[in-house]
Image (tube, rainbow, N blue to C red):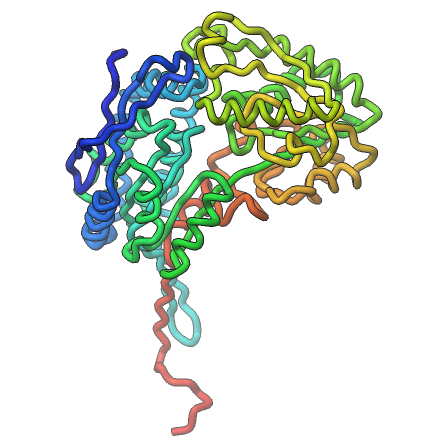
Length: 492
């Protein structure tokens, strides 16, 4: 595994394009170290990529589904062979521990394999014979898909779009985040190498590139994962041509701990801690606010801190002892700290968790020691806003109705979790407004690529993963063949 700077390139119509202007990507563990460079593509290059995808669409959508699947399987095999190098690069540019990067690759591969396994069945034509004739319900490719992906899980949140879009016969232009552009470029280069020219294109860049990808009339669908405010601009840009959309947006996911939850269960406590702090809390579906029944609140907090202090070890992502690395970038770290400071200034208690493995390194990078915030007000920013970092508030509730009101008091509705006796937890879960509610687990620990994932309210539109994730990249085309083509009530 080379420690030389990685040079990412754009891929347009099968050709690698190295831009004159390049943006460095720093190592958040040691910000003075440059991990690699990504091109700063122009809006004109984005247009070229869209044109390439548009030109490749007719041939690719007519390619037999068996061949599309085999090409994707070849890409999967090449990704498996390159997985150690990809994980190493991801941890360096992102800051997540190596086990976390390896896990992200594992989720990406599991989804791609699921998509390959089920694509033929899900995407096949449905033929219905009936007394008035025959109807064919076809699942057609849509056209050019623009994909814009975030920095927190760049591999899985790119492959979640690439696999179903291409298997369904679409072509794609993908733009990754400038805050984690390197490892995903390596993955896309692998996948594109198994495909005809123009089917999968890659561009990097700033806002102007994103505007082109979301407004160009030759783009038929947008697949975006990121912030809700950005999504509002994307929807406006796409409005003139009524583009199809899949939007997986922010979340302020509530964890509700019922009075019958066993606070002495160390494994369950560990699951809650991990659901708050995996990837330094930088996951859209992380549990970001915990509501605990008042009767067990004090004991829960005590056992939670105990479990957190056992699991949390902050340091170098390549140290096998470490469970949490740095925050991905300085701006995000400053934002999270501002929420913590704001809560503390209003009288909340902030408790640091876990231990710092290397103080000198901690002070060098974008590290934050995870914290739990107690005695915050229900409407403090640290409670109502998505922190997206290593801090979590814990607040009490009085009864099930109160817990449900608190959980639903948000513009978001991505995921949630309920902890307690199973039947009781399910009863409460049915009243929570979220795309997914997990029972006695949360966040990535409860993710299953076989089932649809997405949000309600301002957490998004549409679903990814599962069979619905495949169908999301198709147009339903109904072909009717009546027996005589005439309506019986129209006179001759």
